[in-house]
Image 1 (cartoon, rainbow, N blue to C red):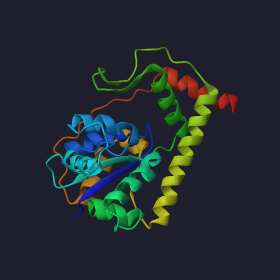
Image 2 (tube, rainbow, N blue to C red):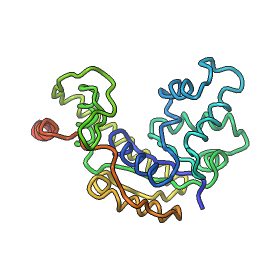
Image 3 (cartoon, rainbow, N blue to C red):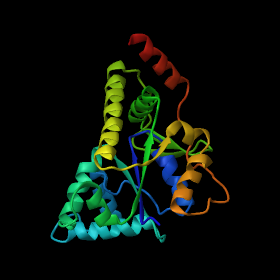
Length: 242
């Protein structure tokens, strides 16, 4: 039996969709608790003081465990590759005898099932991120209503250089995950965005089987795709300019 699930991904790889499915299946309530830029917001929501005084990190860790478990036996976490070293540094201060890498994570969270969520089509992934950054709209529900917006609506603008930089960044991050898994002798359960978006029940079934949990009676994705004609046009233009 596992004590924790860590969803290892990159931005716009389908992690929000998978986090929702995991929560519906009783696998904690995964979120980016150790995403450095989100920690102040999490801390405020948990009633922690903004000043990082002595004992703050332990209180934050304890609150993150409660939030990530959400009343279940399993702690669930979403972790982007860019935040891995930050999280390991954070944990090393709380578990100074815990070792490094996988051993340190085990000292903090117990037996961990690592999931690696990646997207085969890095260009489509890059376009998705650039378009979300420009429009401010990151997620919509299946009925089309907005779930996450970070800025007032703006019209998207094709930007070859920005898209290309994002493609390179995503390829680097995915490769870095694989390098870390190899270095730590971790064999993650691998899931692709493409299979997750096509048939969410299939990868969820593999996860539940690995955890020894029953599948939920119904699998209802909480988010819908944002790709549209603009996305397709940007992909076409980028390929033509390469």
